Image 1 (spheres, each protein chain N blue to C red):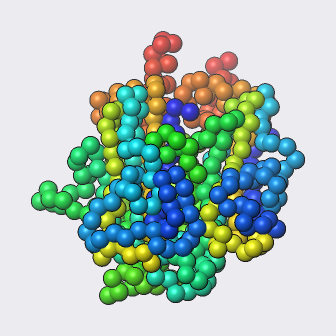
Image 2: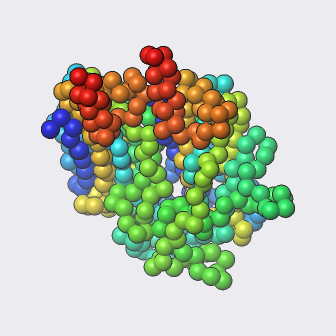
Image 3: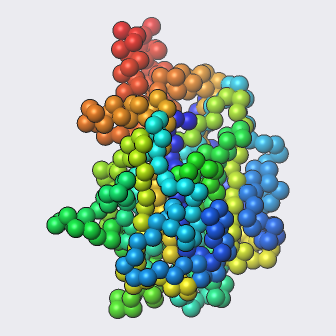
Length: 204
Length: 203
């Protein structure tokens, strides 16, 4: 199991704690407008025990990020201290809007003019965005995923973020690094291809 | 029939909702809903590839003032509709899905891997690379849910379901699957057939 498909879901729901999730009651998070919140260690909603990072023998490929489309939500990926999504003038931005990458796919469309608080449950938001090329987290790097709401999150709101990534560990992480040096996309197929080519070379 | 596409659907109907909350329940032998007669395992001549998993979705809402939401239960005053369910695959004693800090998580949320899929819940997750269950291993799939208000007191049919799609390789095809694994080739019916063809054409 040296290549593993992994997911992380963060949600702001009352009673969520570092390791625990809670019932459906609202009241989990109060977040000011235009403020970044780490979904891993932000202290709101469910969190993990330490900042997300790769060891010397791990390589992570982030393949999808998404968040609730209401409340002008957006999601940003940060590698070490650098934000991945930037404006064309290389200034900071909120990241991928939940309206472009909704979680879940098919979430209700926020009604226009209602600051995203009210949903039209008869209409679904479908993704306009695909994270391709994927984002690489090299061995030894830290990474974070940040949620931001344009209008703020009140205690009566429940919002969520989602990250899908593939973790390459041990020999497969070395191969992922090698593929990166070769300018080849790191994905399970190409890692398998490199292994086969090594075996064929060894057998010849 | 040495390669067989297989499915398993679990419906938690009849279970007591409060007994499920915060506890991982095996969909095979958990004692809730439909179960099988013994833990799922592969024999020495079997190889299983789990290709898809899904569980009942949930939805996170803002200022909801509705009591029924797209087929999910939404209790008054709550902002989460549905059971808030997660699905974890366990091989022998090891959880497959981990948090980024390396600690076992609840697994894939139903919101990301919904069952059933619908226009409202299309899924953000696909299980790729697949999960391999090697010969002689046991495997289990556990569902954990947190929102008791998203379920009836006695769970009704369709309120909490899970689904697994896997391919069972048996006999010679299981040996070929092992060989492909050694070679670093993905185990799927196409590659097993390719290996068989290459053996035949080598004769």
